[in-house]
Length: 194
Image (cartoon, one colour):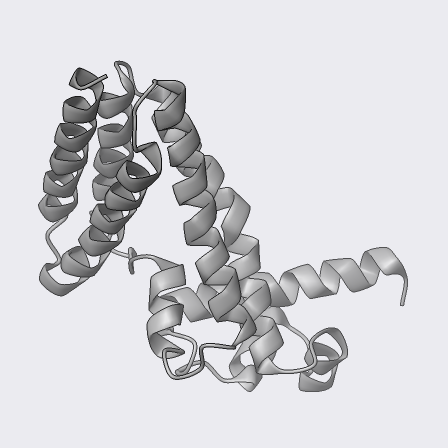
């Protein structure tokens, strides 16, 4: 098998796993189901991944940069000051949450399923992803001269992740918009205290 073919097969397996894991949850999806959806044998799947745990980690790792880039894009495309731009992230997430196939944050859902396995590689990837978002936002807020930008970034992350949870419970994306208004209020207050 050539390197390109191996990479293509691996990518196909991760893509199939991502669709199934996001739609049904990691515990509900068997390795057999992923292999079937990817059009490979179980043996081929295990050639590319040592275990289902490695496949779960690859699934989340594949979501990391695209998700961060999407948040950054929404931030950049929103007109206004930094408070309005952050609120724009929440508004765009609420719009996404209105799609019938929306299932919430894959990082949080996977973390909930693996809560009793803190050393799982997917848990480390999920934690790193959330920390990357927090650090990116911290830098954006610090650029605005906001004191305590690190704490403020953490507060916004808590509002963001809390809104993911509540929207899943109530199936009402307006909670995400409300969380965005709260984040904007916190940032506006911090901007006025400079």
